Image 1 (tube, each protein chain N blue to C red):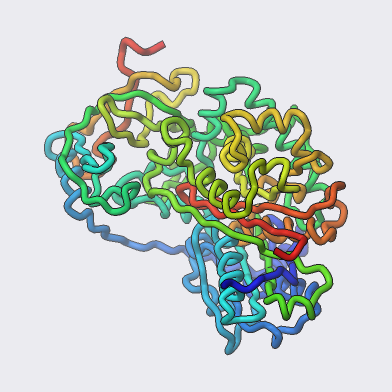
Image 2: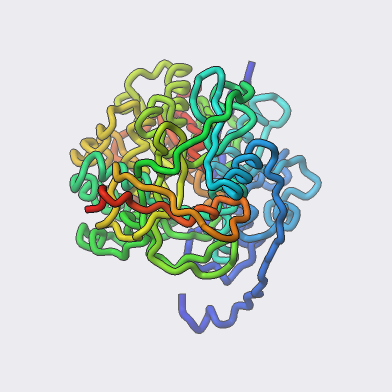
Amino acid sequence: MARRVAIVGIGQTHHQAHREDVNQVEMVNEAVTAALEDAQLRIKDIDCVLHGNMELFEGVHQPDMWHVDGDGAYLKSGMRLTTGGTTGGTIACAAYNHVASGLFDTVMAVGWEKQEEGHTTTGIAAMADPLWDRRLQTGAISGMTAATMIRDFGERAGEVAAMVRIRDGENASRNPYAHLRNKVTREEVMNSYMLVHPIRLLHMCPQSNGACVLIVASEEKAGRITEKPVWVKDHVTTHMEAMLNETILMRDDLAEWASMRVCARKLYKRNGITNPVNEIDLFEMYDPMVWMEMEWADWFLLLERGGYLKLVEDGVTDRNGSFPVNPSGGVVTTNPIGATALIRVAEAALQIRGDAGEHQVDKEVKTAMASAFGGTFWTILHLLSKERP
Amino acid sequence: MAKKAADEYLVMPYLVSVPCNFSAGPYMGRLLREMKEHKKLWGNKCPSCGRIMFPPRAVCGQCHGVEAGDWVELSDKGTIFAFDVCYYPYIDPSTGQPKAVPWARGVIQLDGGGALIHFLEPPDPDKLHPGMKVQAVWKEEGRTGEMMDILYFQPIEEDKR
Protein backbone atom coordinates (compact mmCIF):
# COMPACT_ATOMS: atom_id res chain seq x y z
CA MET A 1 0.00 0.00 0.00
CA ALA A 2 1.47 3.34 -1.06
CA ARG A 3 1.91 5.95 1.68
CA ARG A 4 0.24 9.35 1.29
CA VAL A 5 2.57 12.06 -0.03
CA ALA A 6 2.24 15.85 0.27
CA ILE A 7 4.04 18.82 -1.27
CA VAL A 8 5.41 20.83 1.67
CA GLY A 9 7.87 23.22 0.04
CA ILE A 10 7.98 25.16 -3.23
CA GLY A 11 10.71 27.39 -4.62
CA GLN A 12 11.64 28.88 -7.97
CA THR A 13 13.95 31.44 -9.51
CA HIS A 14 12.88 34.59 -11.30
CA HIS A 15 13.10 33.03 -14.76
CA GLN A 16 14.92 35.21 -17.31
CA ALA A 17 16.59 35.26 -20.70
CA HIS A 18 19.93 36.26 -19.16
CA ARG A 19 21.52 34.96 -15.96
CA GLU A 20 25.18 35.64 -16.70
CA ASP A 21 25.33 36.94 -13.14
CA VAL A 22 25.40 33.37 -11.73
CA ASN A 23 26.75 29.98 -12.74
CA GLN A 24 24.53 26.86 -12.87
CA VAL A 25 25.31 25.83 -9.28
CA GLU A 26 24.42 29.26 -7.95
CA MET A 27 21.22 29.49 -10.00
CA VAL A 28 20.01 26.07 -8.79
CA ASN A 29 20.77 27.12 -5.23
CA GLU A 30 18.41 30.09 -5.47
CA ALA A 31 15.44 27.74 -5.94
CA VAL A 32 16.70 25.25 -3.34
CA THR A 33 17.03 28.05 -0.75
CA ALA A 34 13.56 29.37 -1.62
CA ALA A 35 11.97 25.91 -1.23
CA LEU A 36 13.70 25.26 2.11
CA GLU A 37 12.54 28.66 3.35
CA ASP A 38 9.01 27.97 2.16
CA ALA A 39 8.98 24.66 4.10
CA GLN A 40 10.88 26.15 7.06
CA LEU A 41 13.34 23.28 6.74
CA ARG A 42 17.14 23.04 6.68
CA ILE A 43 19.10 20.94 4.24
CA LYS A 44 19.82 18.36 6.99
CA ASP A 45 16.06 17.62 7.03
CA ILE A 46 16.16 16.37 3.41
CA ASP A 47 16.75 12.60 2.97
CA CYS A 48 17.20 12.48 -0.79
CA VAL A 49 17.82 14.88 -3.70
CA LEU A 50 16.50 14.20 -7.22
CA HIS A 51 18.02 16.28 -10.00
CA GLY A 52 17.14 16.75 -13.66
CA ASN A 53 17.63 18.79 -16.83
CA MET A 54 18.56 18.14 -20.49
CA GLU A 55 22.27 17.41 -20.70
CA LEU A 56 22.62 18.28 -24.39
CA PHE A 57 21.20 21.76 -23.89
CA GLU A 58 24.22 22.96 -21.95
CA GLY A 59 26.57 20.17 -23.05
CA VAL A 60 27.45 19.21 -19.46
CA HIS A 61 27.36 15.50 -18.76
CA GLN A 62 26.03 14.50 -15.31
CA PRO A 63 25.69 18.07 -14.03
CA ASP A 64 24.30 16.67 -10.76
CA MET A 65 27.94 16.03 -9.79
CA TRP A 66 28.89 19.67 -10.36
CA HIS A 67 25.72 20.89 -8.65
CA VAL A 68 26.12 19.15 -5.26
CA ASP A 69 27.23 22.38 -3.59
CA GLY A 70 24.14 24.15 -4.85
CA ASP A 71 21.48 21.49 -4.29
CA GLY A 72 22.81 20.20 -0.97
CA ALA A 73 23.09 16.56 -2.05
CA TYR A 74 26.48 16.01 -0.35
CA LEU A 75 26.47 12.50 1.20
CA LYS A 76 22.72 12.19 0.66
CA SER A 77 20.79 9.65 -1.39
CA GLY A 78 19.78 10.81 -4.80
CA MET A 79 19.17 10.13 -8.42
CA ARG A 80 19.47 11.98 -11.69
CA LEU A 81 16.53 11.82 -14.10
CA THR A 82 16.31 13.21 -17.60
CA THR A 83 13.38 12.51 -19.91
CA GLY A 84 13.36 15.47 -22.28
CA GLY A 85 10.60 18.02 -21.83
CA THR A 86 8.92 15.73 -19.31
CA THR A 87 12.00 15.86 -17.03
CA GLY A 88 10.38 18.08 -14.39
CA GLY A 89 7.29 15.85 -14.35
CA THR A 90 9.41 12.72 -14.07
CA ILE A 91 11.30 14.16 -11.09
CA ALA A 92 7.98 14.96 -9.42
CA CYS A 93 6.76 11.39 -10.08
CA ALA A 94 10.02 9.99 -8.68
CA ALA A 95 9.84 12.20 -5.58
CA TYR A 96 6.33 10.88 -4.94
CA ASN A 97 7.43 7.28 -5.51
CA HIS A 98 10.42 7.62 -3.18
CA VAL A 99 8.18 8.75 -0.32
CA ALA A 100 5.12 6.63 -1.15
CA SER A 101 7.32 3.52 -1.10
CA GLY A 102 8.27 4.15 2.53
CA LEU A 103 11.97 4.29 1.74
CA PHE A 104 12.31 8.07 2.28
CA ASP A 105 10.39 10.63 4.33
CA THR A 106 11.44 14.00 2.90
CA VAL A 107 12.60 14.30 -0.70
CA MET A 108 13.69 17.33 -2.72
CA ALA A 109 13.09 17.49 -6.49
CA VAL A 110 15.33 19.90 -8.44
CA GLY A 111 14.60 20.80 -12.08
CA TRP A 112 16.58 23.45 -13.92
CA GLU A 113 17.85 24.72 -17.28
CA LYS A 114 20.30 27.46 -18.23
CA GLN A 115 19.53 27.67 -21.92
CA GLU A 116 21.73 30.68 -22.62
CA GLU A 117 24.79 28.47 -22.01
CA GLY A 118 24.21 26.00 -24.85
CA HIS A 119 22.22 25.45 -28.03
CA THR A 120 18.74 24.10 -27.36
CA THR A 121 17.77 23.43 -30.99
CA THR A 122 20.82 21.20 -31.46
CA GLY A 123 19.98 19.37 -28.25
CA ILE A 124 16.39 18.77 -29.33
CA ALA A 125 17.33 17.75 -32.88
CA ALA A 126 19.77 15.23 -31.42
CA MET A 127 16.84 13.36 -29.87
CA ALA A 128 15.58 12.26 -33.29
CA ASP A 129 16.69 8.97 -34.85
CA PRO A 130 20.23 9.67 -36.16
CA LEU A 131 19.75 7.08 -38.92
CA TRP A 132 16.57 8.59 -40.27
CA ASP A 133 14.92 11.96 -39.73
CA ARG A 134 17.35 13.92 -37.55
CA ARG A 135 18.24 16.17 -40.49
CA LEU A 136 14.57 17.15 -40.80
CA GLN A 137 14.36 18.67 -37.32
CA THR A 138 13.36 22.25 -36.66
CA GLY A 139 14.07 21.77 -32.97
CA ALA A 140 11.14 22.74 -30.78
CA ILE A 141 9.52 24.90 -33.45
CA SER A 142 7.48 22.40 -35.43
CA GLY A 143 4.61 23.79 -37.44
CA MET A 144 2.68 20.54 -37.87
CA THR A 145 0.26 21.08 -34.97
CA ALA A 146 -0.61 24.56 -36.15
CA ALA A 147 -0.87 23.37 -39.77
CA THR A 148 -3.44 20.69 -38.92
CA MET A 149 -5.41 23.08 -36.68
CA ILE A 150 -5.59 25.61 -39.53
CA ARG A 151 -6.50 22.81 -41.97
CA ASP A 152 -9.47 21.91 -39.74
CA PHE A 153 -10.58 25.29 -38.33
CA GLY A 154 -9.24 27.92 -40.75
CA GLU A 155 -9.02 31.55 -39.61
CA ARG A 156 -10.84 30.80 -36.38
CA ALA A 157 -7.78 28.84 -35.20
CA GLY A 158 -5.55 31.90 -35.71
CA GLU A 159 -7.95 34.08 -33.72
CA VAL A 160 -8.02 31.61 -30.82
CA ALA A 161 -4.20 31.36 -30.93
CA ALA A 162 -4.08 35.11 -30.33
CA MET A 163 -6.64 34.84 -27.50
CA VAL A 164 -4.54 32.20 -25.73
CA ARG A 165 -1.41 34.37 -26.02
CA ILE A 166 -3.24 37.45 -24.74
CA ARG A 167 -4.53 35.44 -21.76
CA ASP A 168 -1.05 34.06 -21.01
CA GLY A 169 0.44 37.57 -21.15
CA GLU A 170 -2.23 38.90 -18.76
CA ASN A 171 -1.53 36.06 -16.33
CA ALA A 172 2.26 36.33 -16.61
CA SER A 173 2.09 40.07 -15.90
CA ARG A 174 0.80 39.09 -12.43
CA ASN A 175 3.41 36.38 -11.84
CA PRO A 176 6.72 37.74 -10.53
CA TYR A 177 8.54 34.52 -11.50
CA ALA A 178 7.41 34.54 -15.16
CA HIS A 179 9.92 35.38 -17.91
CA LEU A 180 7.85 37.33 -20.51
CA ARG A 181 5.67 39.50 -18.27
CA ASN A 182 4.44 41.98 -20.87
CA LYS A 183 0.80 42.05 -21.95
CA VAL A 184 0.29 41.64 -25.69
CA THR A 185 -2.45 42.63 -28.12
CA ARG A 186 -4.14 40.69 -30.91
CA GLU A 187 -2.33 42.84 -33.50
CA GLU A 188 1.05 42.22 -31.89
CA VAL A 189 0.47 38.46 -31.99
CA MET A 190 -0.89 38.48 -35.55
CA ASN A 191 1.97 40.65 -36.87
CA SER A 192 4.86 39.05 -34.98
CA TYR A 193 7.76 37.50 -36.94
CA MET A 194 7.04 34.25 -38.81
CA LEU A 195 9.41 31.65 -37.31
CA VAL A 196 8.20 28.46 -38.96
CA HIS A 197 5.08 28.92 -41.06
CA PRO A 198 2.42 29.05 -39.61
CA ILE A 199 4.03 29.70 -36.19
CA ARG A 200 4.73 33.31 -35.26
CA LEU A 201 7.18 34.50 -32.61
CA LEU A 202 4.42 35.31 -30.11
CA HIS A 203 2.87 31.86 -30.52
CA MET A 204 6.08 30.33 -29.20
CA CYS A 205 7.70 29.96 -25.77
CA PRO A 206 10.95 31.82 -24.97
CA GLN A 207 14.27 30.20 -24.02
CA SER A 208 14.49 30.78 -20.28
CA ASN A 209 17.08 30.25 -17.57
CA GLY A 210 15.70 29.07 -14.27
CA ALA A 211 15.18 26.39 -11.64
CA CYS A 212 12.26 25.01 -9.67
CA VAL A 213 12.33 22.92 -6.49
CA LEU A 214 9.62 20.90 -4.76
CA ILE A 215 9.95 19.29 -1.34
CA VAL A 216 7.59 16.39 -0.72
CA ALA A 217 7.07 14.49 2.52
CA SER A 218 5.25 11.57 4.07
CA GLU A 219 1.94 12.20 5.82
CA GLU A 220 3.55 12.05 9.26
CA LYS A 221 6.33 14.51 8.36
CA ALA A 222 4.02 16.77 6.37
CA GLY A 223 1.80 17.23 9.41
CA ARG A 224 4.78 18.59 11.34
CA ILE A 225 6.18 20.73 8.51
CA THR A 226 3.14 22.63 7.22
CA GLU A 227 -0.45 23.56 7.92
CA LYS A 228 -1.15 23.66 4.19
CA PRO A 229 0.00 20.36 2.68
CA VAL A 230 -0.95 19.81 -0.97
CA TRP A 231 -1.56 16.13 -1.57
CA VAL A 232 -0.29 14.32 -4.63
CA LYS A 233 -3.36 12.25 -5.37
CA ASP A 234 -2.07 10.42 -8.43
CA HIS A 235 0.29 10.56 -11.39
CA VAL A 236 0.35 8.77 -14.74
CA THR A 237 3.09 8.55 -17.40
CA THR A 238 2.39 7.48 -21.01
CA HIS A 239 5.05 6.85 -23.65
CA MET A 240 4.72 6.93 -27.45
CA GLU A 241 6.63 5.41 -30.34
CA ALA A 242 9.78 7.09 -31.52
CA MET A 243 9.04 7.94 -35.17
CA LEU A 244 7.89 11.53 -35.59
CA ASN A 245 5.83 10.83 -38.71
CA GLU A 246 3.74 8.34 -36.77
CA THR A 247 3.08 10.72 -33.89
CA ILE A 248 2.08 13.49 -36.27
CA LEU A 249 -0.30 11.23 -38.18
CA MET A 250 -2.04 10.24 -34.95
CA ARG A 251 -4.13 13.38 -35.31
CA ASP A 252 -6.41 11.63 -37.77
CA ASP A 253 -6.46 7.84 -37.71
CA LEU A 254 -5.03 7.32 -34.25
CA ALA A 255 -6.55 10.26 -32.34
CA GLU A 256 -8.08 7.88 -29.80
CA TRP A 257 -4.59 6.61 -29.04
CA ALA A 258 -2.86 9.96 -28.62
CA SER A 259 -0.68 9.58 -25.51
CA MET A 260 -2.42 12.57 -23.89
CA ARG A 261 -5.85 10.96 -24.25
CA VAL A 262 -4.65 7.57 -23.00
CA CYS A 263 -2.91 9.23 -20.04
CA ALA A 264 -6.01 11.27 -19.12
CA ARG A 265 -8.37 8.30 -19.42
CA LYS A 266 -6.21 6.29 -17.05
CA LEU A 267 -6.00 9.14 -14.53
CA TYR A 268 -9.74 9.86 -14.61
CA LYS A 269 -10.71 6.20 -14.32
CA ARG A 270 -8.51 5.67 -11.26
CA ASN A 271 -9.87 8.79 -9.58
CA GLY A 272 -13.56 8.56 -10.47
CA ILE A 273 -13.55 11.63 -12.73
CA THR A 274 -16.14 11.60 -15.53
CA ASN A 275 -16.27 15.29 -16.53
CA PRO A 276 -12.79 16.78 -16.03
CA VAL A 277 -13.73 20.39 -16.92
CA ASN A 278 -16.36 20.39 -14.17
CA GLU A 279 -14.64 18.20 -11.61
CA ILE A 280 -11.08 19.58 -11.78
CA ASP A 281 -10.70 23.20 -10.68
CA LEU A 282 -7.63 24.24 -12.64
CA PHE A 283 -5.09 23.01 -15.21
CA GLU A 284 -1.41 23.95 -15.46
CA MET A 285 -0.53 22.62 -18.91
CA TYR A 286 2.84 22.10 -20.60
CA ASP A 287 2.24 23.88 -23.92
CA PRO A 288 5.45 25.00 -25.67
CA MET A 289 3.32 26.99 -28.11
CA VAL A 290 -0.27 28.23 -28.06
CA TRP A 291 -1.22 25.80 -30.85
CA MET A 292 -0.28 22.83 -28.71
CA GLU A 293 -2.54 23.97 -25.88
CA MET A 294 -5.36 24.44 -28.40
CA GLU A 295 -5.02 20.93 -29.82
CA TRP A 296 -3.81 18.85 -26.87
CA ALA A 297 -6.43 20.18 -24.45
CA ASP A 298 -9.05 18.28 -26.49
CA TRP A 299 -7.13 15.10 -25.78
CA PHE A 300 -6.48 15.84 -22.10
CA LEU A 301 -10.05 16.94 -21.40
CA LEU A 302 -11.66 14.22 -23.57
CA LEU A 303 -13.35 16.78 -25.86
CA GLU A 304 -14.31 16.46 -29.52
CA ARG A 305 -11.67 17.90 -31.89
CA GLY A 306 -12.01 21.68 -31.67
CA GLY A 307 -14.09 21.58 -28.49
CA TYR A 308 -11.43 23.46 -26.54
CA LEU A 309 -11.51 26.41 -28.98
CA LYS A 310 -14.97 27.29 -27.68
CA LEU A 311 -13.78 27.15 -24.05
CA VAL A 312 -11.11 29.74 -24.89
CA GLU A 313 -13.54 31.91 -26.90
CA ASP A 314 -16.04 31.87 -24.02
CA GLY A 315 -13.42 32.91 -21.45
CA VAL A 316 -13.76 29.62 -19.54
CA THR A 317 -9.95 29.22 -19.39
CA ASP A 318 -9.29 32.79 -18.15
CA ARG A 319 -7.84 33.31 -14.68
CA ASN A 320 -11.31 34.12 -13.42
CA GLY A 321 -13.11 31.62 -15.64
CA SER A 322 -14.70 28.41 -14.42
CA PHE A 323 -11.74 26.27 -15.62
CA PRO A 324 -8.58 28.38 -15.51
CA VAL A 325 -5.72 27.13 -17.68
CA ASN A 326 -2.17 28.34 -16.95
CA PRO A 327 -2.96 31.15 -14.49
CA SER A 328 0.84 31.35 -14.05
CA GLY A 329 1.19 32.52 -17.66
CA GLY A 330 2.18 29.02 -18.72
CA VAL A 331 5.06 27.71 -20.79
CA VAL A 332 4.48 30.19 -23.62
CA THR A 333 5.75 32.94 -21.29
CA THR A 334 8.35 30.91 -19.32
CA ASN A 335 10.32 27.84 -20.42
CA PRO A 336 13.47 26.80 -18.52
CA ILE A 337 12.93 23.31 -19.97
CA GLY A 338 14.19 20.96 -17.24
CA ALA A 339 12.27 23.02 -14.67
CA THR A 340 9.18 23.65 -16.78
CA ALA A 341 7.11 20.55 -16.00
CA LEU A 342 8.02 20.86 -12.31
CA ILE A 343 6.81 24.49 -12.39
CA ARG A 344 3.43 23.19 -13.61
CA VAL A 345 3.12 21.01 -10.49
CA ALA A 346 4.46 23.81 -8.27
CA GLU A 347 2.05 26.40 -9.65
CA ALA A 348 -0.91 24.00 -9.34
CA ALA A 349 0.10 23.42 -5.70
CA LEU A 350 0.43 27.17 -5.00
CA GLN A 351 -3.11 27.70 -6.33
CA ILE A 352 -4.44 24.97 -4.00
CA ARG A 353 -2.62 26.56 -1.05
CA GLY A 354 -3.99 29.97 -2.00
CA ASP A 355 -0.43 31.29 -2.13
CA ALA A 356 -0.15 32.24 -5.82
CA GLY A 357 -0.34 35.95 -4.95
CA GLU A 358 -1.35 38.30 -7.76
CA HIS A 359 -2.13 35.43 -10.12
CA GLN A 360 -4.22 33.46 -7.60
CA VAL A 361 -7.51 32.49 -9.26
CA ASP A 362 -10.76 33.79 -7.77
CA LYS A 363 -12.42 30.42 -7.26
CA GLU A 364 -11.45 28.01 -4.50
CA VAL A 365 -9.09 25.36 -5.85
CA LYS A 366 -9.60 21.92 -4.32
CA THR A 367 -8.25 19.81 -7.19
CA ALA A 368 -5.69 20.79 -9.81
CA MET A 369 -4.08 18.96 -12.72
CA ALA A 370 -0.59 19.49 -14.19
CA SER A 371 0.80 18.05 -17.42
CA ALA A 372 4.26 17.41 -18.84
CA PHE A 373 5.25 16.96 -22.49
CA GLY A 374 8.44 15.67 -24.03
CA GLY A 375 9.95 14.36 -27.26
CA THR A 376 7.58 12.30 -29.34
CA PHE A 377 4.49 13.12 -27.27
CA TRP A 378 5.57 11.51 -24.01
CA THR A 379 3.04 12.60 -21.44
CA ILE A 380 2.71 12.89 -17.66
CA LEU A 381 -0.32 14.03 -15.67
CA HIS A 382 -0.32 14.91 -11.97
CA LEU A 383 -3.51 15.24 -9.94
CA LEU A 384 -3.20 17.33 -6.76
CA SER A 385 -5.80 17.83 -4.02
CA LYS A 386 -6.42 20.03 -1.02
CA GLU A 387 -8.17 17.25 0.89
CA ARG A 388 -6.18 14.29 2.10
CA PRO A 389 -6.83 11.46 -0.40
CA MET B 1 19.48 44.55 -16.54
CA ALA B 2 21.89 47.38 -17.29
CA LYS B 3 24.38 46.60 -20.04
CA LYS B 4 27.24 47.95 -17.95
CA ALA B 5 26.64 45.34 -15.26
CA ALA B 6 26.39 42.51 -17.81
CA ASP B 7 29.80 43.45 -19.25
CA GLU B 8 31.41 42.63 -15.91
CA TYR B 9 30.37 38.97 -16.03
CA LEU B 10 32.85 36.51 -17.45
CA VAL B 11 31.44 34.00 -19.95
CA MET B 12 33.59 31.10 -21.19
CA PRO B 13 33.01 30.17 -24.87
CA TYR B 14 33.35 26.45 -25.62
CA LEU B 15 32.57 24.48 -28.78
CA VAL B 16 31.63 20.80 -28.55
CA SER B 17 32.00 18.66 -31.68
CA VAL B 18 31.38 14.92 -31.35
CA PRO B 19 32.11 12.57 -34.27
CA CYS B 20 29.61 9.69 -34.17
CA ASN B 21 29.19 6.35 -35.99
CA PHE B 22 25.71 4.83 -35.65
CA SER B 23 25.02 1.16 -36.52
CA ALA B 24 22.03 0.82 -38.83
CA GLY B 25 21.22 -2.83 -38.00
CA PRO B 26 19.63 -5.31 -40.44
CA TYR B 27 16.23 -3.59 -40.89
CA MET B 28 17.19 0.06 -41.30
CA GLY B 29 20.33 -1.21 -43.04
CA ARG B 30 18.32 -2.95 -45.77
CA LEU B 31 16.22 0.18 -46.39
CA LEU B 32 19.31 2.39 -46.66
CA ARG B 33 21.03 -0.09 -48.99
CA GLU B 34 17.93 -0.24 -51.25
CA MET B 35 17.85 3.55 -51.36
CA LYS B 36 21.52 3.73 -52.26
CA GLU B 37 21.60 0.95 -54.86
CA HIS B 38 18.10 0.99 -56.40
CA LYS B 39 16.43 4.30 -55.40
CA LYS B 40 13.66 2.31 -53.73
CA LEU B 41 11.84 2.56 -50.40
CA TRP B 42 11.04 -0.57 -48.40
CA GLY B 43 9.04 -1.07 -45.22
CA ASN B 44 7.93 -4.13 -43.31
CA LYS B 45 4.62 -5.36 -41.97
CA CYS B 46 3.52 -6.19 -38.45
CA PRO B 47 2.02 -9.69 -38.67
CA SER B 48 -0.27 -8.91 -35.72
CA CYS B 49 -1.93 -5.56 -36.54
CA GLY B 50 -1.01 -5.55 -40.25
CA ARG B 51 0.30 -1.99 -40.36
CA ILE B 52 3.22 -1.08 -42.60
CA MET B 53 6.17 0.09 -40.53
CA PHE B 54 8.34 2.74 -42.18
CA PRO B 55 11.21 3.01 -41.65
CA PRO B 56 11.30 -0.78 -41.19
CA ARG B 57 12.20 -2.14 -37.77
CA ALA B 58 12.60 -5.37 -35.82
CA VAL B 59 9.41 -5.24 -33.76
CA CYS B 60 6.04 -3.48 -33.67
CA GLY B 61 6.06 -1.23 -30.62
CA GLN B 62 2.27 -0.89 -30.68
CA CYS B 63 1.78 -4.68 -30.48
CA HIS B 64 4.29 -4.96 -27.64
CA GLY B 65 7.24 -6.59 -29.32
CA VAL B 66 5.69 -8.63 -32.12
CA GLU B 67 8.51 -9.53 -34.51
CA ALA B 68 8.20 -7.91 -37.93
CA GLY B 69 6.94 -9.95 -40.88
CA ASP B 70 7.02 -9.48 -44.66
CA TRP B 71 9.00 -6.82 -46.49
CA VAL B 72 6.93 -4.48 -48.68
CA GLU B 73 8.17 -2.23 -51.47
CA LEU B 74 6.71 1.26 -51.01
CA SER B 75 5.97 4.03 -53.48
CA ASP B 76 8.14 7.14 -53.69
CA LYS B 77 5.00 9.16 -54.47
CA GLY B 78 2.51 10.31 -51.87
CA THR B 79 0.32 13.02 -50.38
CA ILE B 80 1.20 15.93 -48.07
CA PHE B 81 -0.51 15.48 -44.69
CA ALA B 82 0.89 18.68 -43.16
CA PHE B 83 3.89 20.91 -43.84
CA ASP B 84 5.78 23.84 -42.35
CA VAL B 85 8.25 26.40 -43.71
CA CYS B 86 11.25 27.50 -41.64
CA TYR B 87 12.25 31.19 -41.76
CA TYR B 88 14.28 31.66 -38.60
CA PRO B 89 18.10 31.49 -38.67
CA TYR B 90 18.78 27.80 -38.27
CA ILE B 91 22.01 25.89 -37.57
CA ASP B 92 21.89 22.38 -39.03
CA PRO B 93 22.98 20.25 -36.05
CA SER B 94 24.41 17.54 -38.32
CA THR B 95 26.82 19.98 -40.00
CA GLY B 96 27.08 22.89 -37.58
CA GLN B 97 26.51 25.20 -40.55
CA PRO B 98 23.71 27.75 -41.05
CA LYS B 99 21.01 26.41 -43.35
CA ALA B 100 19.62 28.70 -46.05
CA VAL B 101 16.06 29.81 -45.32
CA PRO B 102 13.29 29.43 -46.19
CA TRP B 103 13.12 25.64 -46.26
CA ALA B 104 10.01 23.46 -46.12
CA ARG B 105 9.33 20.00 -44.81
CA GLY B 106 6.20 17.89 -44.81
CA VAL B 107 4.71 14.71 -43.43
CA ILE B 108 4.15 12.66 -46.59
CA GLN B 109 1.80 9.67 -46.65
CA LEU B 110 3.15 7.34 -49.32
CA ASP B 111 0.74 5.80 -51.84
CA GLY B 112 -0.12 2.31 -50.63
CA GLY B 113 1.22 2.80 -47.09
CA GLY B 114 4.08 4.16 -45.01
CA ALA B 115 4.88 7.79 -44.22
CA LEU B 116 7.91 9.97 -43.66
CA ILE B 117 8.98 13.53 -42.99
CA HIS B 118 11.08 15.04 -45.76
CA PHE B 119 12.05 18.33 -47.38
CA LEU B 120 9.57 19.90 -49.80
CA GLU B 121 10.18 22.17 -52.76
CA PRO B 122 9.33 24.93 -53.34
CA PRO B 123 9.56 26.32 -49.78
CA ASP B 124 6.56 28.58 -50.26
CA PRO B 125 3.34 28.20 -48.21
CA ASP B 126 1.34 29.53 -51.17
CA LYS B 127 2.59 26.76 -53.46
CA LEU B 128 2.09 23.78 -51.13
CA HIS B 129 -1.10 22.50 -49.50
CA PRO B 130 -2.29 19.52 -47.46
CA GLY B 131 -3.60 16.80 -49.75
CA MET B 132 -1.18 17.76 -52.55
CA LYS B 133 0.39 14.88 -54.54
CA VAL B 134 4.18 14.85 -54.38
CA GLN B 135 7.03 12.63 -55.56
CA ALA B 136 10.59 12.01 -54.43
CA VAL B 137 13.50 13.61 -56.28
CA TRP B 138 16.45 11.23 -55.88
CA LYS B 139 20.09 12.09 -55.87
CA GLU B 140 21.31 10.67 -59.21
CA GLU B 141 25.03 10.45 -58.38
CA GLY B 142 26.91 9.68 -55.19
CA ARG B 143 24.16 8.16 -53.07
CA THR B 144 25.59 7.01 -49.74
CA GLY B 145 22.74 5.09 -48.09
CA GLU B 146 21.01 7.75 -46.02
CA MET B 147 17.75 9.63 -45.92
CA MET B 148 19.32 12.47 -47.91
CA ASP B 149 19.70 10.14 -50.94
CA ILE B 150 16.27 11.66 -51.58
CA LEU B 151 16.95 15.37 -52.05
CA TYR B 152 13.36 16.47 -51.47
CA PHE B 153 9.77 15.82 -52.54
CA GLN B 154 8.13 18.06 -55.13
CA PRO B 155 4.57 18.46 -56.43
CA ILE B 156 3.55 16.11 -59.24
CA GLU B 157 2.96 18.27 -62.30
CA GLU B 158 -0.81 17.90 -62.71
CA ASP B 159 -1.45 18.80 -59.05
CA LYS B 160 0.40 22.14 -59.06
CA ARG B 161 -1.78 25.14 -58.54
